[in-house]
Length: 552
Image (tube, rainbow, N blue to C red; front, top):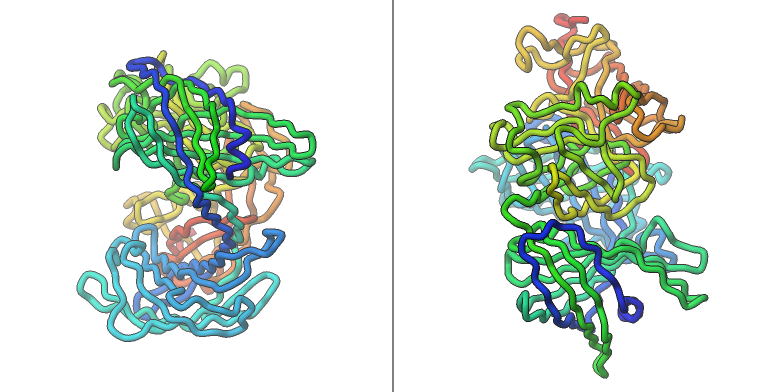
């Protein structure tokens, strides 16, 4: 890390926030000699199994190894991890193992003790704990390529004062994603009289977009915390270090995702006078100006792909939700504003601005479909904007920013992945947005009384998804029509059984999955999920009618 700091002088910070209160400052950033490296391999396997008397659940088994091979390609060393039991979109139990890590990473069959995690169990199982008596896992590898295990579990949990049996017998799970993480973490202090004294956290990692050709490219994310709530954060998006030529190419540095009194803050600054001490520590002078957000400044609090993981992960040509304060006009009507009638559609293009609201992702304009105001729409707990992200191959941490009329937000950090596949939902419980071949809604009779009906065994139904990436055919940026077949076919499962599936992009960012319900599908709600290259969908529910009550 210290080699990188030698190359960070000087750096010009980019200014992006509207002025309300500007603070000129000079101070020091002091770095401790305590670099901690995280070299980790995580593998997640998916499957379905029956859990005691609780019924069927999607099983997400995660193996974690905190050591990597010399070429950083595979994990080595002891294994810890967890098994997540997902009964629906609301109710889940997590059982951890690793208090006694599995020492043999090449095991064929092994037993391991487990513990229920109260912090990661949700819904009716929120706060669940291990019941008296041992919880034991048995993992049996049944295939190397693809990696498959049979998982068995014995033991019980206590949830809501009731004991629930967690028995699972030889449930098969298959590798869905493997991910290598290589990160250096450093600490220190921030001594800036105009802002205060605080603690420094600095994270650096290889930039996956640009690696090779004699250069090493590092992405830095830093934060100065002046209190429990007041944290100033920033990111150096790209640093190019060409060791052979001895040259450095600096990308922009952006303050983003700050909190407390620094929420929405931006500014300019410069690092100078890098000094290393004999004990291996270092310091650098920072000077410049910081612009704090005013009462009407747009502030982003979250960026997510709907119905995917709760952390801010997005993809290109993907639908995302942006939430926060002052993001949309005060005059926004009840129910929000859609892009319907935008003049751009007459030219076959999507609007990059709707009702004075615009969004950029990694500096490129996104397409604003809809927004709502907390003040006029009770269903919106915060101001919310739904947009389609632009075409952009860049992967890693990117900035998201909002323009509301003449006011602009500070940047917010999101992690951009190749795909973030997500099944759209009708209900909080997790019923998939699905239709019969004639367009009628598919779901339990009680979901939308008089409008929704369950699927029939053997019926091919359509599910609607987002975040599946780009089709085989090249898309035209901003075009209001998008169609094409995917370069891969998702592997999808209903009630634990593999199903026939055909997938295609049918309109901007919207994908249609045609799924044939197996003839042996159980009546009632069935867990459905798909895996795709290095990713998976969160499980959803598909209602299936009894054989005698099937409706087509």
